Image (cartoon, rainbow, N blue to C red; front, side, top):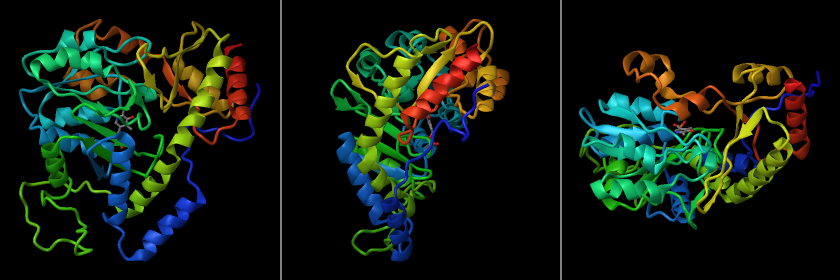
Length: 382
Ligand SMILES: *Cc1c(COP(=O)(O)O)cnc(C)c1O
C-alpha cells in the first residue's frame, strides 16, 4: 500500500498574511459588526458579478430562508429544485410550509434540465432553484424558456459558482442568486453568504429581513453608527455579516480569479491522468458556452469490486481526503419517512447519489498532490 506522509484534505482555504493582518486592523478599529467592510465587500461583489444589489449575510442558508420569506412562499406552494444538492435548500422550503418538488438531474452534469423541470411543473409552482453544480453553469436560458411563459421566477443556488459565467456573463442574471462563503467554497469569510439581485423591491425586502425588519443595517454610513430612528417595518431575522468576516471576503475576492485559474489547471490535470482509469467516471461538461469555477472535482465510482463508501475509506487509509457532494436529500431519514417518492423516481439522482465523491481540489494543491491522489486511486483499484 502506497501512503503519503501527510494527510491531503479534499479542500482547504487559502488565506494569506495580508488577510490575517486586515482582520487585525478591523479588530483594532472599534467597529467589528456590519460596517464599512461589509459595504466594501458588497460593492466589490456587485462589480464582479455584474449585479445591481449585493447583500452580505451570515450564510447562504440564511439567504435562502429570507428569500422564501420575501417571495411569500408557504403552505400550498411548490418549489422545484434538485434533490441532489445540499440539504439547506430543501430544509428551508419544508420549514416554510411549502412543498419541495424534485426535478431529476442530467446523469452526467448533475444539473436539472429544461425537460426535467417541465415534467414536474404544476399550477402551484412558485419558484425554480437550479444549482450551478460543482462550479459549472446550469442551463438558465433553457430553464427560463419553460418557466417564463408561466411567470415563474428562477433563483440560482450559486454556492459553488462565484466566478462561473454563462454565455459570456457572470451567473446570477435571473431574479436573484445566493452565494456561500463557507470555508470549502471558492472564496471564504469563515462563514458567510451573499444575495445578489437587480430587483430593487426584492433587495429592499432582503435588507429588511436580514436585520430585524428595521430596513437599515447595523451601520449607518452618515452617522458612522447605528441609525437611532430605525423601527420595525416587518418582523425580521438576524442574518447580517460582521465586518471581521467581510474584510476576509474583500481580500479573498481580490484573489478569486487566480484561485479559479489554479483550480482549472488542477482539474485539467485530473482529467488527463484519470483518462485510463475506467472505475472513475468524471462529470461531463455542458455543451453550451460557460466558464467553469471548478469548485469541486466530482467522480462517480463505477467499479463492480468496490463501492463509493469503500473507496472513500480506502483513500483515507492512504492519507487522501475524499468529499461527498451530495447524498440525495429525498433519500435522507426525515424525507424518506415524511415525503416518500414512488419507487423508481429520480433515476439519475439516485444513481449518482450512490456513486459520487469529490477528489481533493483547492488552489494550494501541487502537481505532486495530484500524482499522489492518482497513485492512491490506482493502488485502491488494483
Ligand atoms: C454550501 C452550500 C449551500 C449552503 O451554504 P452555507 O453558506 O453553508 O449556508 C447551499 N447550497 C449548496 C449547493 C452548497 O454547496
